[in-house]
Length: 268
Figure 1 (spheres, rainbow, N blue to C red):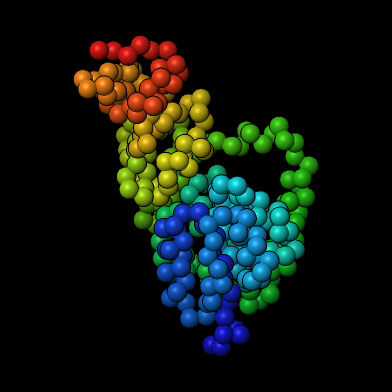
Figure 2 (cartoon, rainbow, N blue to C red):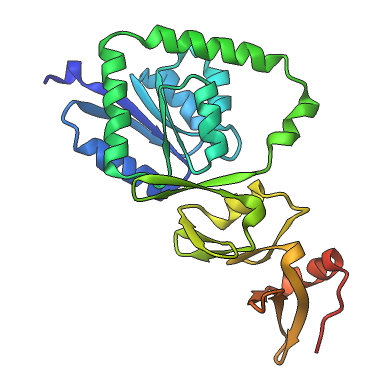
């Protein structure tokens, strides 16, 4: 296949590992030319306008411009075929509302990628792109009439989707007791299970309701109503004890705010 016939693909994701994974998977396709790899929405808008890709893998939840904002700014009539990439089922559902071609739920396996990519390849070959653009346009027109007051209701996660070897498990946020960091992953702890997702603690902290969850340490987020006591340990260290007896470290610079949120005195 000549270079002229190759699909021009743009990768947009603020997570390094996600960008690298897509690059590796696309590198196995002999009919693909990766025209750009960018890490935020603003660069995505510029790259789409400059390179005019046939297909873009677009992360939805990014600081600054989100994936939806990118579509809005570029304009649906100028958008290439879009496969949204997301760690959250809330956004995956919104991707369908947007009439995107498909979505990949992090962490996705090779087979799921192949399904989405093949669907994109066929759509482009059959020149069905205009249908997608029309649906994008209809969605954005509907969004423009929404009030600003209505937006905060969708800001915080209600469910988190976990990809578990070919099946997607939806974990209600209300069931999560605490979250801990594990390298490039986060572990969601419920009463009965632990679920692993590929996401940064900073991103999760921003997406969880601060009235319900509190980041007690760089490696731990806790549901406030699960905390039984704030403990003071020898040496000046702090910890929280959960109602089931589990203990988690508390950063010194978070201790004062946590005391205020809990209305608890530190215990000796």
